[in-house]
Length: 83
Image (cartoon, rainbow, N blue to C red):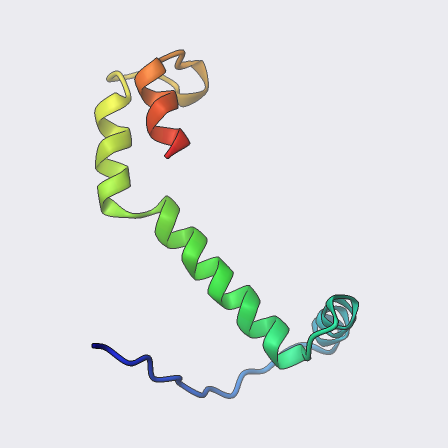
């Protein structure tokens, strides 16, 4: 069983960004630290889902060669994207 080890890093945040993040955290009723941690975790999860090599290979198999993605009307492509 793997245990997750937290890494601590000091980061610099511009004052305007700090104020905006503070307001957003307050609006959600969480600490600024927890809010930033949640944002970073969500960004990693969504990036992993979109840029997963396995998903990229599946999507690549549904894309006809030389087609613009916006012009594709392929049921296989739509099915893969729905997963």
